[in-house]
Length: 343
Ligand SMILES: NC(=O)c1ccc[n+]([C@@H]2O[C@H](COP(=O)([O-])OP(=O)(O)OC[C@H]3O[C@@H](n4cnc5c(N)ncnc54)[C@H](O)[C@@H]3O)[C@@H](O)[C@H]2O)c1
Ligand SMILES: [Zn+2]
Ligand SMILES: [Zn+2]
Image (cartoon, rainbow, N blue to C red; front, side, top):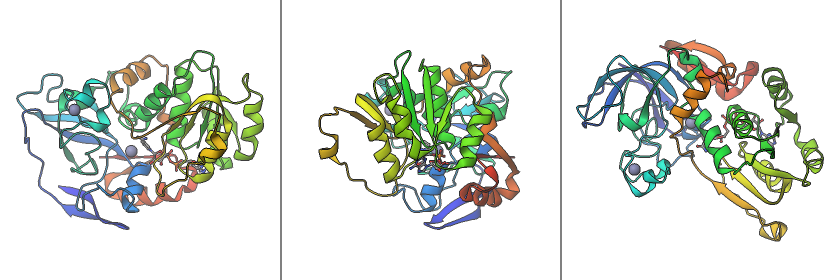
């Protein structure tokens, strides 16, 4: 089968690989029906993800149909339409039992798919720990509606949860890309009364205003003025989903004292923490890769009509035109938010 693989920083290529086999009783093989490209794939290609294995098949955001299961798999069976967690995890170790699945100690735990083991930009994928990684998609939820559940939407649920949003809170999300929009929608789901997305590109601000009128939008130069008008003179929670030094500065500046600031973005450079400027503001910073174990909750919310991120899939391509999809996604041309790759 054809697989789109990471060769070395700056270089990806088509490779012919054998169909994956079940290697452990807890594995499943999934036939990919729709996949996407994530900004983290671009970080791999930029050489900014040191643990990414050379030769690995890219792709970690996808849905599919279970083709085959190992004898230890009980929650899904061949023929089930499933959403796939970006992270595979054992469910039993110290970290998994606390929900910190990104740091699962299993050699195939954490973000492995499309990074350390072969991922979804191929026809079939071996998914370790299928019982924790795969979730049946309800009949009234389409593949496109479920496509982002494993990664960017999960990041929204995770970031909004760890941002400690209380009912009635006023929150700010920096970065109005797919991740930022998911974070903002999830902050609303968690009971925030007002959520503003700060985005520097006008066409993305317009996209948000058009598709998600329940969110406020603001340009970076206006953000401080907007949060000054919040009840406590700043945001109760800030989620940084842009990944630049300017965005980080805006995040801690816009936070009110004692706020939680979640850094959801993946940075390509180290960042200086300006502790003297922050002294006395008593902020709580949380960082990291999503603990991706939210799919059942996400699919239930999607099925109940509480959240719909399918408008983020602005462009669709057949698998044979995957390279075009990468080029468009990386260029951000034509108003692209996410690309859907159809098998
Ligand atoms: N924590 C996780 O587990 C996780 C999961 C998925 C993706 N990510 C990361 O999240 C980040 C966002 O992903 P995305 O797909 O939405 O990326 P994206 O590049 O599409 O979106 C980032 C947005 O931030 C905007 N931006 C940049 N600087 C800004 C500033 N100073 N003020 C306001 N807006 C600014 C950009 O215009 C862009 O629209 C990436 O770094 C990605 O790798 C993290
Ligand atoms: Zn991702
Ligand atoms: Zn574990």
